[in-house]
Length: 342
Ligand code: ADP
Ligand code: MG
Image (tube, rainbow, N blue to C red; front, side, top):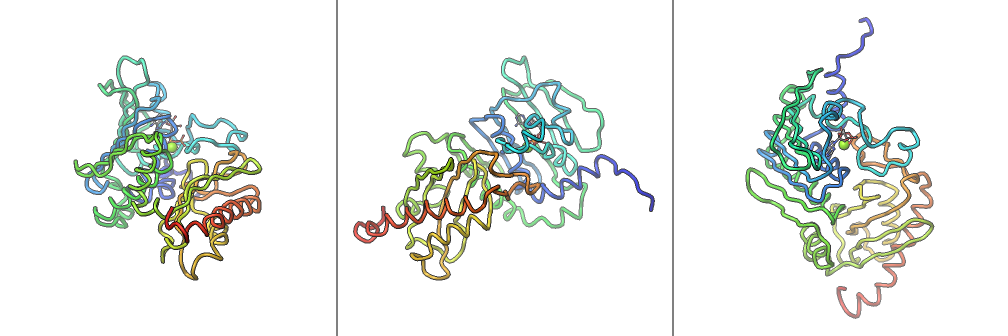
């Protein structure tokens, strides 16, 4: 076969293969966009497990009318402009591919209104267009993205989706985890008109505890130690479960790097090491931890879905985590025995 350049929709569909695995991945990308737009409130409406419809509305900065077609174009982003920026990304997004990827495998409507604008503006895309029609709309400030009929045009992908119930449970798990990454943002999640989560921005200690309990369970806080540790420009905060609160599976471990939930072998290894002397063999610790560091020290461009990161100095991170948690657990030991759960 001769070599040829692929049509744009197919290029986007290939990219979608990496970032849009299922309805929950759409939710992840759109909520991250809301975070990047400085939203204080994110409303997520889902129908039929997200297979039929996913709608995310935020009260963030909005998109200029002129920029709407760009938002749907590949490699177009307002978040970075140079390699220098890429090497110190502070936003959740930067690749400029989520919206074009999603629109190539679903029917997407983007409606947005920046503060002070007379009305909102709306574009609709199904991945095939080269020109976008922009229509006025009556929406409030902020942005709404509606995604319908995911994978309607890629039957091979659609086949891999599970039941509505399973797909929704992926969405719910994801939203709960994202809610723990940004206590200052309110979240509302509805499935087929039924309210599943309704979280106001958590400001007071009590509100933070309540949100935490809702996500990790009531008993976690009663069995956890608060962690607060800084050294060498790194800071770690959050909660670690007492050794007695361990689980047989590693399913209650949340680790955020600069507000991004990540999975990382080095991180889980360092944490396990810190628990080594206090945890029974085969048991898994429970934790919700936040690592804050200079974005230049971590490469978030390791994977299109951005679930993995690369630390520039992994030894430093390992030692820091080990030290922080080892200390927290050592201090807690006598207390845990004498006074019971903290
Ligand atoms: P990226 O997030 O990597 O920049 P996306 O395809 O997710 O790429 O979004 C493209 C652009 O559209 C963003 O850079 C941003 O300027 C704009 N955008 C997308 N979603 C929103 C939103 N909810 N509010 C404001 N702007 C948005
Ligand atoms: Mg994005």
